[in-house]
Every structure is written in structure tokens, then in C-alpha cells.
Amino acid sequence: MFDRMEGSLLIALNQDVVDVSDVAIENDEYHMIDRIEIQNFRGFRTLSLSGLGRINVVVGKNASGKTALLEAIRLGLAGTPQILWQTNQQRMPGYGFAIPPTQESFESIWNPSFYNLDSSLPIVIDCHDSRGNSSHLKIFYDNDRAITAIPNQTSIAPSGAIALLPPSNIAPLIFERTDFNGNESKLSASMGNQGNIQMDQGPELGIVSEFYSANAFLNGPQNAQAFSALSINNREGQVVDAMKEEFSPLISELVVLSATQIPGIYAVVPGFREKVPLALLSSGVNKLFTILSAMILRGDGVVLLDEIDNGFYYDRLETIWRLIYRLSIKHNTQVFASTHSQECLKALAKVVKGNETDFNLLHAERDKDGISVTQVEGEFFEDAIEQGFEVR
Image 1 (cartoon, rainbow, N blue to C red):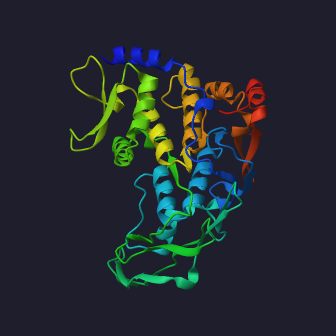
Image 2 (tube, rainbow, N blue to C red):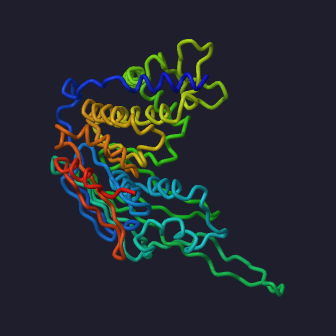
Image 3 (cartoon, rainbow, N blue to C red):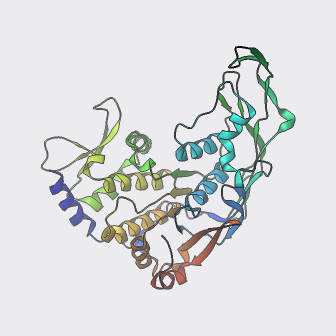
């Protein structure tokens, strides 16, 4: 069954994509992130990038800082404890800490985000949009607000002696923020008496964004939730039409079902008696749905895509890039995407041609002083690829 589906998929991806000049822009007042400054986040001691474009592609060797750059942008646009927690959990799923809680165990959750694991230097991220508005985020431990998370505890030594442990005084992690409208606020993360993490809730800083790690593309319930959010606003037709355009005649319709009590996206496939879970068609079909729905849902905002090429057959990448570029214009979505693939860049170079001002290549490198990023503007994109620009 699935061999037949794959054959139809390859035929479908060969179809031409509508030229971007024909795309109607939904908001002609669109503004994007033009500049970002990062200090003391993960491998970045200090970094300043300006002249960012509509489509920004991050390349570099393993552990060069590609994912960290995407995480920094997401964190800088959100400015909440929840987003920093999520990015750490995506890297270290299920990472826990000791009970009873201590300052050391609390800091072990957050310190991987600080440059060189040195939390004495605050994380600072400033984002500037193309209208001249800015946001500011500063993350640091406030020792003056340390709280007693647990009372005195007893401990039994190997000899059988009972010792009284001092109380745990835990300094909260402060998120000092200024949003794009100039409003100042503070949020904090701390630890409760039972070792539970307590994080203040608060709005993000003003530009909607979403980060998709390499594993997030396989999240069926998340796709179902995205499809439902589009459907509530009568916008699901946009992603359905895009999927049908790319994968016709393989897909004739998409629906959300909960056949196994876990909601998922199902495809109506002509010639098959039952609807088929989207993830079973192929990982590439499922991943493209995630990307398309994100770009529509996060219109007038930023979508960050880690390892964008994974799951796509190399000779179909040009078509996929054309679709992403077209939707970025239609829905005013700025894209930051990382890749390891030279084939992915060669495919993109064909899309860049004639649209150079919308593209940026960001080459991440790591040395003893941390991560640096070299920018290549769209007009030099093709030359950089032809000269064997290092991406692996």
C-alpha cells in the first residue's frame, strides 16, 4: 500500500509551484526581526546580527551553535520562564533534580543556558524589528530574594548517626523584560517546598513565534491541535489546499480524528477504504504539514525550524523551499531554519535567484571564545554554495 503512496508522492512533488509574484500579501504593514543581540546564552559569549531577512538559513558543523541560535531568538521574543524551560527539556527530555531541593539542584535546571555554565553573567537578548521597535530580556539569579524552600531536614549517615541539615535557601531566576511597546515587567522561576518548579505566567514580548526542534515534527497531537486552531477560525482550507496542491492525487482531504483517544491528522486517500494517519503516509508529508500550519498560524511572526531538511527526499527540496517562500510572503512569516545538508542549500539557491533581498545565510562556527556567526547576503548566496561553503 505505502509503496504506491510513495510513488504518488514523488509525482505530486514534481508539480510546479505558483510563482511568488502572484501571491497576495495579507498584511502590507508587516514588520520582521531586523537585528538581534545575544550575550551569555549557551555558546554565545556575545553576538550581534543585523540585516536579517524574510528567510534566514543557519548552517554549520555539529555543535556549532545552529540550534542555540534558533533557541536564542525564540527566548528573546518570548521572555518567559516557560520557554527557557521548554528549550532545555527539548535538549534533555525528562531531566530532573534532587529531592530535597537545593540551590544546586535548582540551578542545574537552568545553568546549561548560561555561557560556559557561568550564571554570574546574566543572559541578555535584545531584538529589534524593522520598524525600529525593540524588546529586551535579562535573565539572572536574584540572591537578595532567596527564599527558604524547605525547612530543616534530617539525614542518616552511614554510621547510623542522625544529622540536621540546614534549610535550603534558593535564589529565584529573574526574567527582567521590556516588550516591543516599551512596557517593563518581571517574571521569576523558583522552587517550592516539595521540589516543584514554580514559574510566573506572563505574555510574550509582542511578536508571535514558534520553535520546532527536530523531534517536534513527529508530534501528531500537536499537528491536530494546530489544525483545530486553524479550523476554529475557518482557515484550515489554506493548509489543506497547500497540501493537496503538493500531494495530489495522494491526498484529497485532511481531517482531525481521535480514533485511538489521541487526536491526529488523517488523510483521505483516493482508492483507499479508510482514512490514513498522516504520519503513515511518510515522515516528509507529516513534517510539511507541521511547517505549513505553523507558517499560517504564526502569520506576522517568526517560525524557527531546526534541521528543516530531515525527512525530505533531496531532489524534492527545491519545490518545498518554493512553497515555504511563497507562504512566507502570503502570511508575512519570517523563517529561521537550520540544515546540515549541502543538497538543501543547492535547492534553496535556485529559489533565491531573483529574490536575493529576502534571503540570508548564517554560518555558525565554534572556537575557544564561543560561537560566532558569519552572514552571507542573498546576492552572494549562490556563489557561496558553488564554492563549497562548509555546512556539515
